[in-house]
Image (cartoon, rainbow, N blue to C red; front, top):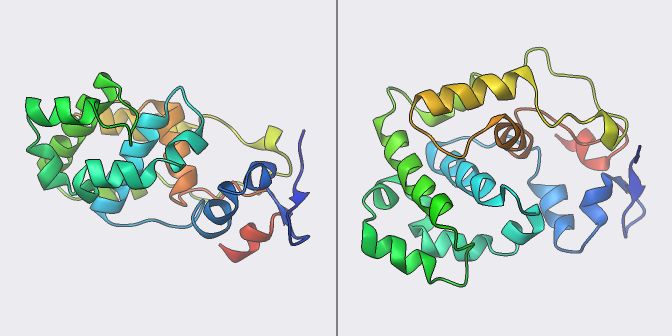
Amino acid sequence: MTAAVPGPDGLLRCPWGVSTADYLPYHDEEWGRPVHGDRALFERISLEAFQSGLSWITILRRREGFRAAFAGFDPAVVAAYGEADVERLLADPGIIRNRAKVLATIANARALLELDGSLDELVWSHAPDPAPPAPKTLADVPAVTPESTALAKSLKKHGFRFVGPTTAYALMQACGLVDDHLADCVSRRQN
């Protein structure tokens, strides 16, 4: 039952947002803010998939390495990756070198290019309406919702991998489909 805590400037924030200096700008400037565009959402889906089983800080600290390794998450470029690219990625110390996740990222780029419509439309069609109430503590923040389960099912139906309901909910949080900043968090009032 962890409520908002003061950050270095005395303003209340989600506890995870002040747990390390690397989280503070991500919490304040990115997490929970609406993200649109197929390329931006492809990047977020890819990073959330790589995060599976790891802490987000591990991915956040390697985000620039991921961007370099995956051509800025340009889906057309990533979709064309072959076995030599897979081997290159598996040798890249700037990313998480997990074969299944690398292959899923390439498959997801291909799935994105085959969509009838945009990834943006697909993802945002699963935003809850009405928006859920502001969580007061971390215990009030779910790991899975009916909307994230439906989003994961829809993404899988279109050929996406590593997109289970928990990963889909993390995507929804990070991309602003839901605002899970705690009720007293300064960032909640800014979204």
